Length: 107
Image (cartoon, rainbow, N blue to C red; front, top):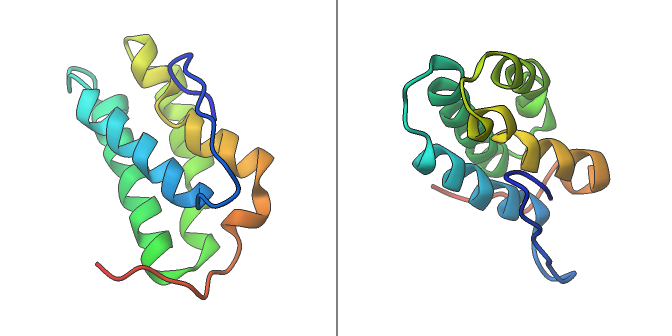
């Protein structure tokens, strides 16, 4: 999963969706809040992942593609431009981890 030029190495016991949530939390926390695409988008990515992990419905992640595009095109700095990339990368490379879930988290 790439985001801010970092590489995260995980073994096969790690839930990829949970790892994407950790990254989303990092980007939301590190956002300075100056530009709306990053400030709103980073929060939306985190909240979408939390809802997905709670309810197990992959349709909850469908709007992320549009949000990621808005963040990449509209953010002022590099952090905002790549804040959705860990989730996008995880969905591209580990699509099976983002299907219908039966092992849902509880808030």
